[in-house]
Length: 183
Image (cartoon, rainbow, N blue to C red; front, side, top):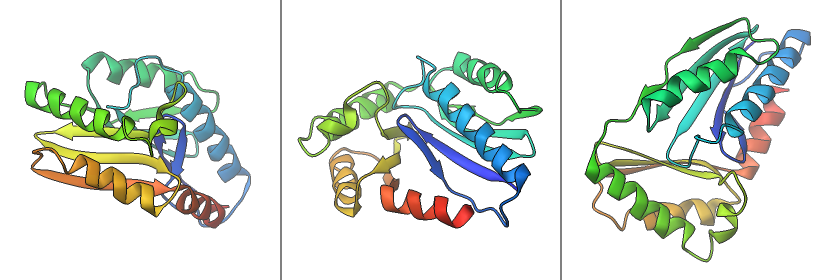
């Protein structure tokens, strides 16, 4: 009976399964959805942050990376206030301060969100593609419409002198299928 979600500003991504659908799982799903809303409505949560959550009978484990230390505590406080959360294990880490990493983040974000194929992804308050840069290594997370967009985002990110680019983007079909398999 556990759920794992990874937040992309526009939504959440189901990444772990559930053995059987019962009242506890539905409760965990509702708690997960409420946590997603709480994190996504946090004004300091940006495309350069990525949060994952596992909910098991109201016990929440937070993982992921954020750009500033204060975000760790603020996100934990927001999650702890969600109805149905009994306990929070906060394993969120803070990305190291690096001028080069900050510059690389901005370059990749401009390349992706400045590309005509991705302009609609950046519309609204919660862009769906997140760019995590740590020690010159880029990781793309979030949700895109299809395989072409996933591959194009990676190609755009690889244009810059990163040590590596990891593409953890999921397609909407993969997210839908994962959700169907867990219900």
